[in-house]
Image (cartoon, rainbow over the protein chains, first blue to last red):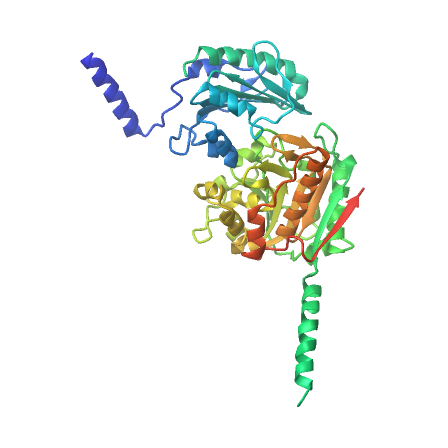
Length: 178
Length: 304
């Protein structure tokens, strides 16, 4: 038990010395890196953002979405992962997984019109979420536990592909710890 | 009693404001629309977009040629022009359309060579993501980010692209509604991207800061045109529509007020409450004297 404690302490100290930002401990990074929409590839490495007080590898939510981050903070935002994918035709997919402190906060964020515009089409099956089609854009928001997921594709003809990717993201979030 | 003096003062009191008013009545805003410039899938028609731009520029300056128009706006042959874009595309793509930028650059080349036009944003990655190719070479229009640009001016805390390299500035914003405390992301907000990165978050919940940035000499004294790309805009956060137009003014405050009016007209049609006037805009007019919101503003609407 003592040995484990000292090893953990040494790892922590090494991380501090190297100045390595703490990444999203709650996510299986390699699994997330390998999970891409059909026909797409990650165009830039996954990015991780925290709060202004608790920055992640790529900074705070303000580094990602500028002033819009205030609304997410009001809804209990803790950290997020951002993925960008491209296919050979130049279409782009964006994935954002926002981790809130509590499930109710993720739900409240989904219902917050400042985050998710009203009058979207409810998603079918097991999803708690909505989709918006603003040609050529198509995007959807859904909740899974304490997480709010945003998925966007630059070409709404690929809406069905995006929904299939959403199912995989949902399953991934469901088995991840808080 | 000599009555001449009191009469002179009374006449002065009556006439001086009239002259002042006519002297400041030059604030002009052009709102030009051409539905053929863009389709419902955000694809621009280059020819129609160029016609839209040309018509608006000539209307704004009352000039007959591009060369004459730019000279009236203060551009001279030895100038270097920096054009600030807003490529932050979070949720919905509202970056300036390439076809509009091409029309602007072609027009500028009636006075200056292409290589003395610099198109920038912060960060460079946002330019690339919006479909622009980085060009720092000595040939053609230059494109790069403030993070890979000419460094930052220690005094003004702005990119040296505008404080040192460029002698003139064009503010090219997008018609973007963000609601919250800022209300919209237009001309004032656009120059937040010209700041030192560590200063950028200061604009949140601080309308005075937001307005003050545009009063810094390199922005206030060098800006010759404020142009808003409203070919596709948003009237509520994350909800776009194809307005199919552009807004143009020398006056950032008047231009911003006109852009808000366009957004509010759409909101009214969608039965949404109007956006409140942003505090930053009021401060920009009254405290920093960056322009005029309503008074002495002449709006010209063009429907093509």
